[in-house]
Length: 333
Length: 257
Image 1 (cartoon, each protein chain N blue to C red):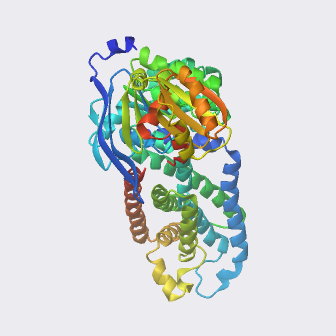
Image 2 (image 1 turned 180 degrees about the vertical axis):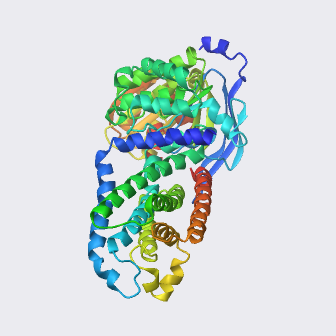
Image 3 (image 1 turned 30 degrees about the horizontal axis):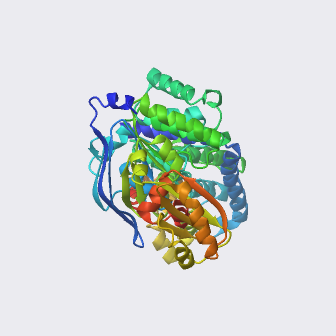
C-alpha cells in the first residue's frame, strides 16, 4: 500500500468522487439513495454490499452506462454526465457479466478493443502481445473464446479493460463464479495493477474476504447508501472485543433467548437469527461458559460455539442491523 | 472519420463471425432459393391474367424475391443486437469510446453484403429457370441498390426497436407483424394494375413497393429513369431517417440501463 502513493504524480489526487448520487428505476425502485464516497488515486477501493445494495448501479453511473437522476460523479477529474467521451477514454471496465465476444478469438477481442481507443500497427500488436503474455492467454490466443474456461474468459475481460492503459479500472464482482484457484490468480493480478501500474481500481464485491484481502479502503453499501467507510482494519477496529457465535440445536423464539441471556452482563450487541445467536464481549472465551449455562437453563440447547476476532461480517451487521448472508439472499438487482 | 474506421472494424468483426458459422451462411442462401422456386412455380400462370404485363413469371418475380429477402434480412437484423445486449458485449462497447453509429453500421454493412450475395445467387437461379433480364448490367445494378436501400432502413429500425424494447419476443412479434404485410402490400408477387384499389393505394406509400418498382423498371426494355430516380431518392431519405432513429435509440438505452 506504500508504493501506490508515489504514483499519484500529476494525476488528480482523487480518482473518483461520487456525491449524493440518486438513481431510480421504473416502478420506483430506488437503486441509489444519496450515495457518496471518494477514492484517492492509485488505491484499490472496495464497494462491499449484498446483491441489490446498489453497487452495480454505482459502477454504471461512474462508467457512463447510465445517468444519475441527481448528484455529481467525477472520474479522473472528469464529470461523467458532462464529459462522457473523455471519461470513457480514461477508464477500463470489467463488467460482472463477461463482455467477451465468444465468436471471436482472444486475440481478435483484444485487437478490436484496442482499435476502439485508436491503437494501430506495431503499437497495437505489441500491446496485445504483452497482455496475452501477462494474463497467460498466449497459448489460447487464436482459439475462439467460446471454448475458454470461466477463469480464462475473466482474464480476457480484465486484459480488454486494460488495453488502453486506463487511469481508473472498474471491476464489478470480478471473481464471482470462479473456482478458488482462478480467484487467487486474479487477486494477485488485481494487486499488481495498483502496486506496479499505479492504476486506481474500484472493485465491487459481495465477498467479505475479497474486500478485506484486496481493498486498501472500502465503503459498505446498503440500500443505495454508504453506511460505513474506512480501511478494513479501521472498520473492524470500531468493534471492540470478540464476536461470539452460538448455534442452537433448534430454532428458539428470540424473546426466550434474550430472556435467558439477560443474566449475563458481559455480553453486548445481542442478535438472534433463526438458530444462530451472535453477541460481543471484551473477552469472549471467559464469557462462553456463563452463556452456555444461561441458554441451556432457558431451554435452548447449544450445538456449537465459536469465538472470533471482529470480521467485516460483524462490521456489516453493526451498520445495517442484518447479517451479510441474510441481506444477500434477500437481494434482487 | 472515426465513425467510418470504427464501422469498418465492426464490419470485419461481423463478417468473421459469419464466416465461422457456415450453417448460417447456408441457411441464408438456401432460403431465398426455396422462395424463388416455390413462388416461381406456384404463381406461374399469373402472367396469363389479362393486364399482367410480363411474359414470364420467373423474370417478374426474381427481383421481387431479391427485395423480399432484403426486407426480411433487415427486419430481423435487430435480433443480433439483443443477443449482444444479453451477453454483455454491448455494454463493453458502450463504456468504450467506440462510435455509436458504427455499432449499428457494422451490422448493416455486413447485412448488405449478404443481400448482394443472395441477390447474385437468385439472379443466377432465375436465369437457369428461364428468366431474362432486359435491363442489362445497369438494370442489375439498380436492383442491387434498391435491395440494399430496403435492407438498410428496415435494419436500422429493427436495431432501434431492439435497443428500446430489449426483448427477443417483442422484436419477433413486431417483425412478424410488419414484414409479411409489407411484402403483400407491394408488387413483389402481383402486378400493381391487378391489385384491389385499396392495396394499390397503400402500396404507393410502401418503401418495399418503391424498391420493387425501381428495380423492375430498370430491368425492363424501357426504363423510366425519372420514376426510378424518384423512388431511389425516397429510399435514401428513408435510410438516413432510420439511421438517425437508430442512433437516438442508444440514448434511450442509456437512460434505462
